Length: 439
Image (tube, rainbow, N blue to C red; front, top):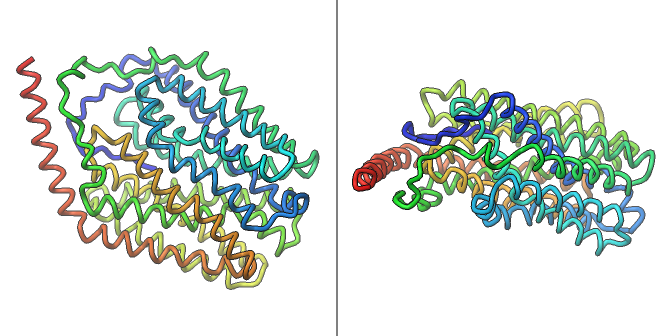
């Protein structure tokens, strides 16, 4: 996801005084924890068939095990991000990783569905604010001109973690059983959680700001929701992730049922499809930056195109019988299904004040989870129980049409909202300058 601050006078001195080598070490460890985050979240998808058979679960129950993590992420991202800013980001990230890793170990030890549900609930609590706090740490140790590149790479790491989680989880389950799949992810996370605070120190990564907290202008939180464009962007992004998130969660089960693949083989092939989605996120974001450098409003048009394109490709894919052509169409559809991530992130940055960008992206994460990643797998599982997974997948891409319609609404008001925000930024800058003079 690319972040594009709109205010040229952003005085964040992030990265000043941080050695470049140390900055890359911070990035690597924070990125590693992001990989662990998504490995712990998505390993469940690879062992769906084994859990379904061992505990006689319905597709709705399986979907809920996946959806509860996204639900907790959506509910807790905002408050936990604020707490991390107050009590220390490094300490908070380490505690988050420790919690989700222990909870993942709890999944390995679960004896029934209820225990598994509680463990997955705690995985969601641990992972809730990692994305927004993690990217804040990464951005804080690099110069401002590198933010967009680093943010895009960091957010795409979620897809790569999903790939590893499903591929390794399926392979481990095929050899040692599904419990060891969870245990392997947990041990990796525990190792990084203990290593992280030893190497990454709050005092070394904290931005070197001038002490003017007592006289700072009140942050314009109202820009998080004051424009029609930004609210529509939240909603459109969430609806589009309903599609991509659902296909990622249910693809191993789909391959197992309709292609007669083993758990390991289904997890491996599903991982390739997820990898297409991650690569598409980066490529679509780069295309957005290149095409919209002088015309920011084109980002909205591109988001609409990604929605409609993925709807067409995935609708055709799931109308085809199982086979190589269907798999090719699924890969192409998933290549652009997550393409709205970059444009949506840039739109949120453009439509909110630079001083509340962190909170704005927490709000975007909330919408992505509450509208897409949480309900998508659950509702699709419920529909699958009634008409089968093949038929359920034929309905899923249609949600992209609703996403495109919401982005179109954002496009209609985008110019006016941008102009109003720029005017407010000038006023706020003048007020801050007056306060500095008085001090």
